[in-house]
Amino acid sequence: MGKKLYGKKLGMTRYFLDEGGSTPATIIKAGPCVVIQRKTVDKDGYEAIQVGFGLQKEDRINRPIRGHLKAAGERVFRHLREIRVDDASQFELGQEIGVDIFSIGDTVSVTGHSKGRGFAGVIKRWGFSGGNSTHGSRSHRVPGSIGMSATPGRVARGKKMPGRMGNQKTTIKNLKVVDVRPDMGIIALKGAVPGSKNSILEISRA
Image (tube, rainbow, N blue to C red):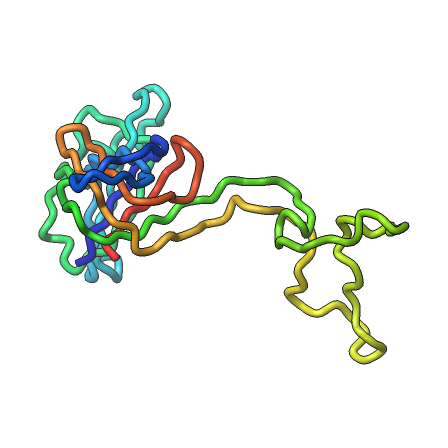
């Protein structure tokens, strides 16, 4: 079973290593993820557990959802996610999964939604160099010719064009765990991860 946890990005900082150097690090408030439901092959066709994380006010949910979350006791969660496992029976309803499943030196992958940049041109979106700024040029930040000759006489599929930039599900692999603090529910990863502050991240063992 692969180790997986969900959390919230708190921001970035500089982390000082034991040997005296420093490295950029992302601080993530991960877990605790509480097991809400177990899914089995006999009943659902696959093995998984549903976990909840991120507390919210009880009056923000309806009675059916409150009944679904009864395994968590009095706690009400803002987010529900599924984690595929080999054997769901190994987990108990109400069980908490925290950052202690990771150790310093582990390599993890982080998945999140990248920052949205809105509608962007080809220079910002794809790194086009642009045209001349002088000598009478009227082509500065435009993409230029996009068509073909008479055959096939159309724009090729996948052509790099202006459009919406960012706000995509993105995964960064092979990030090293530089610190784990179970008492605070915080994990520090070397380097940057997708998303803005307070965005939801999925941390999994690489």
